[in-house]
Image (tube, rainbow, N blue to C red):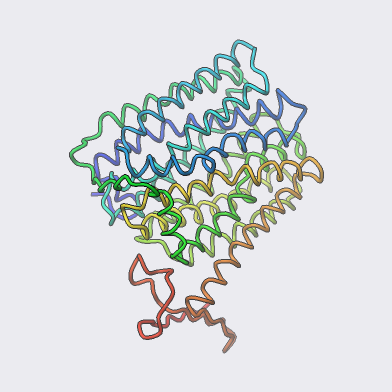
Length: 441
């Protein structure tokens, strides 16, 4: 009997889907590494801005297509949506691989395929995130989200290291082709699910203005607004790891493709640990968000100052842990505290911020790296984490009555206790119902 951290794996459908997704995720991280490398080291003279443009094209559609992607996730069979989007991603990887292997690939080709992949992923991401709620019950949802993040980041630990070796051994194009083949695993898993055992949620009623309802719903929820505001800061300026890692590896430490891939894997070691940490919890808590964003900011600041390749890699482990703790907690928070009929549209807004804000931040971060050096680019990311923590703290002061005092050589924190109900954990407290929790540090 599986208990604790891995309890969702008792569910056959979830276990089958997670296995197929893990194989596909390894291929996805191999392609991301190869894509960053071919742009930075093969198609341009170490141009970080070009890497930022690729990121903007790949993640920008999530924001532009937001009205359509949220609608699709709430109004169509999510399993069928995933079959289409996963197949399309496999085809795109195949074509890019053929162009690269045959030696005809150019920078504009990578730009076009990044944009096409971004359009497909814009529909895939909200459907994939909310499909987890159909694989397991609500009681296991937070755990399943944490395990999904663990799988994704375990693949992130394996994929870049393997990609670095393959790039050096057989070339970048073959990495794209291997990724194309990896999609067979997740497609086969989706087709093998026992549909009658899915925890189906009622699809939203199709009516004019249904997408706008998602924004109206979020606007009335200060708890969700705060989480999304914190997410905006961290994702726009902080989660620009392809730029941070590639520029530090190539321009600061003068590393080859193998060492570049190893740095990405070291970042993933921390991410896996953070995802497992989040998966152990029955439900998300505000303290995890604040800890994750705070440590993320401090960790990036330390990484920016590291003088050697090894110390920089060790700092990335801390950065990976904190980033994943924050991201996983934010994801499960938004899902659990949103009504099932609104979940697809709210998650589309969440993912629009998580993925679509990259076009705002990545080119700027790339420009900072080119103009002032990669260490200053990382410092901008550090500031975003600390600002996010301040935003969360401001919410707690205003809506949860957060108070801090020093007595007897210790720090005493008092907080109105609303964590008893998952759907009220961040909502404003009402004095008659409030209960004070004391946290000593």
